[in-house]
Length: 40
Image (cartoon, rainbow, N blue to C red):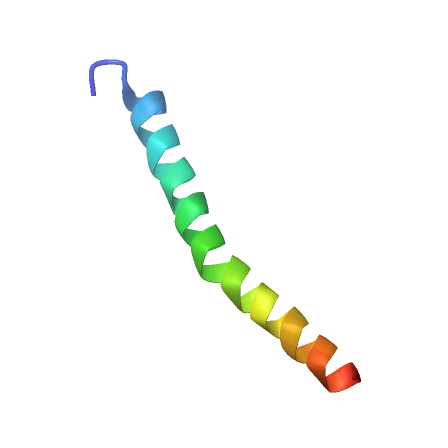
């Protein structure tokens, strides 16, 4: 990769983290909302 490997793999890693966050965050929020509704 002509010396650009850290940038390329860093970009892949950051993208993977963003995708994981986009998968996890709504589920976590939904779970908290449902738990709050059940407590009422």
